[in-house]
Image (cartoon, rainbow, N blue to C red; front, side, top):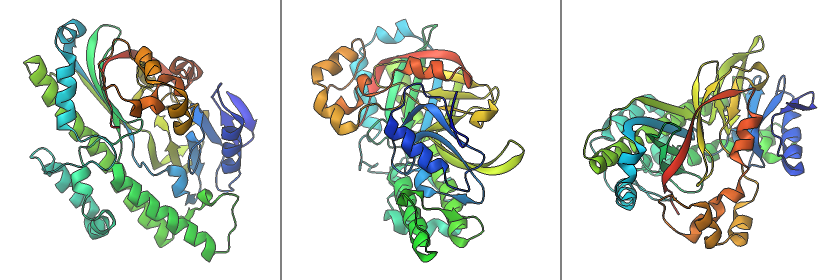
Length: 390
């Protein structure tokens, strides 16, 4: 761990100057106490550094929480072994899942299935008086986004651990619903800064003050969007399990299920005080708590157990962390480069995924090494099927 300033602690051995400067700028906000923590996968982000853990007293910066509210991972360990799965046509499994789950930005369900309806009712109940606001904000599309993947670094994978046991694994969040809610509150915070004659180095540092109506509405909507993200992953995983069971010819027996956010805010108690803790690209890693740290497409992912390391606010990295911007990666790498990275993995061959090539990310093994104070590795997962939205 590197102490960059008294208010900025860093666990990333790979970090560029621009990312470091962004984190220093954020850490100077007076309500960030006692220090901001950078995770091993830290990289430049919109609003705040991705891979940062931000403790705040009496205020929250919506842009620092981010627009993909509640984004995270879910994994299920099945009873099947690798040899049972790889003996079959993995392309058939990939196509089946691609038909069951809408992929890519802007793609929704065309109808509401029986499995998703109880989750929609659960969300309606949690929304209470805010339901009409969510309907208006998303033009009533939110229910049709439940059970959809999105694009970018979101994925569905069939993976195998060190004992050749098969895991089902996916990454997604609150989709356009969470993005719309976050964008609304970021603007509200920026309008508050203008109303209060507060000038900031960066408009993305705009904040809401605890005790104000704007703050209370944000927390209500944030909690709802985080729950939306959790249920979105549950719904997709149920569809993956259904398709995988059909592919294998027998039902999946769940040996283990882990579902964790890595873009979220909640009230926690650390270092003798209550605080709002925003993890933007970081998982909660209380002592003994299981979590998921994915690599990029084509590389390993990890099931980890938290160590409850106090200086990190019981947190750990959420993935590999980018080293190439998306457009730069797309222009630099070729489809042949992607082919080499994906040898032995069933995936949709497309130049649309060049910005997700493993070389565009930090080496996940270095990230895991940097996190040795934060987590213990329980399982190492390697992909045999990768599904993404283009």
